[in-house]
Length: 114
Length: 114
Image 1 (cartoon, each protein chain N blue to C red):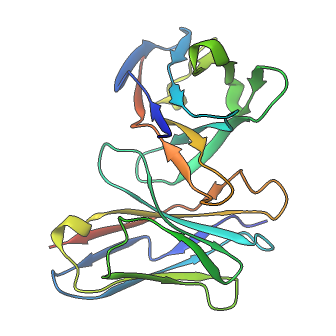
Image 2 (image 1 turned 90 degrees about the vertical axis):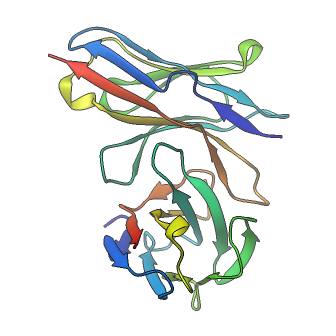
């Protein structure tokens, strides 16, 4: 069990550019979550997948944000036309089919928009 | 609405002293409660969780937490703090199986004095 992995760990981009983050969940975990964490705050829920189906999206997820999990394994989170306010840590978590309430987090991707 | 409050933003304790971090939740039904720890620049590690049963739950690294329904609290304790416990601690409640999301408190930063 290698844990949840995220790539890249750090990303610096200029305002207006598009960025994409990848998350690989723990193998056989069918649920996958994305959260955003700004400095000094707790993580805030963005979206939730069960297998390849995106079942829940937060209002925080503006139309510039899109997430996919095409084969029910890894997931990508894309931010288009980045803004300085998008600077944050983006956390991915996964949970198993049984006991799905317990979420296991990856190391996060820290995004800085200049 | 579901919410989690961590009243103490920052706590400093001496190494070897006892620790209690406070967490209050607002949730209509029986809550599923969690404590996570986050070291600087890292993801979240699960310390312990409460779903039902014994209201005193044991976790990793010598931590324990007590669920008190009458006080809507789930405080985290450790009898003797080590310098390596310095980190940020988050309390969370599980929203529902429909949304899949965890709702986090703002976090408490623990500083350990030698």
